[in-house]
Length: 288
Image 1 (tube, rainbow, N blue to C red):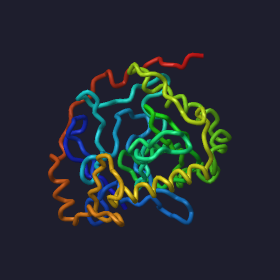
Image 2: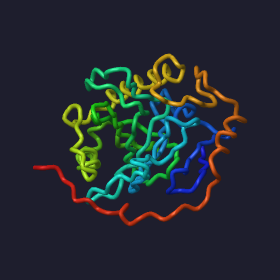
Image 3: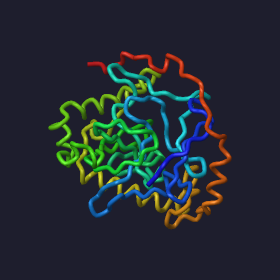
């Protein structure tokens, strides 16, 4: 149903990944619906970072149509450090469209405001997805990272087409069928910024994962926050709401204008190779 259109050269500041449906360009943040099947509670997930890769790619909140681009730090493309024994992310990592962690509101569950992003998803199935895939996922639970004083929910989910999907219905099932995986997930998030000289990350609930129903409440609330944001009813904190079809959005543009937005980015060309530093292992561990 959705496909990507790459523009610019990979591994450069100009690289963008736009999304298209059968009619033309769409925003992966605002136009792709949150629910793939609302009755069965199946959600769409936009894959930003495939498992085992470490380029910090993310939906660009600030640009029209919100293409995926690589995060930039001090003028350089950002790569997440490889904390031994992992290379890059240990799940397919991405976002739930049409959700927004509201920075105007303190989350009563964590005591911190939202981080101004769509909700992050860790998809734990066996297949390594492709950047820009739109997966249909079953939510299993969530953990609550506190990132520099902001709430940053990490939803744990599995592709509904994964062989294990029928066996995984709640967060407890992950430990049963994938022993050690949730502990590895929490440790990954605790330490991944330490090679950059930052302290270990903190969590609400001491890093304990919350169950399926709790995660659904978080998602539904973030969806309601998104509705108000995209409708212009609250301070959007720089989020660009240009879209094609989102209900209630005053910034909708016709398909022809969306095409012109895409064309403003340079055409896809070959990019430079990566420096070996990107693959360096960091022997970072928490103090016992």
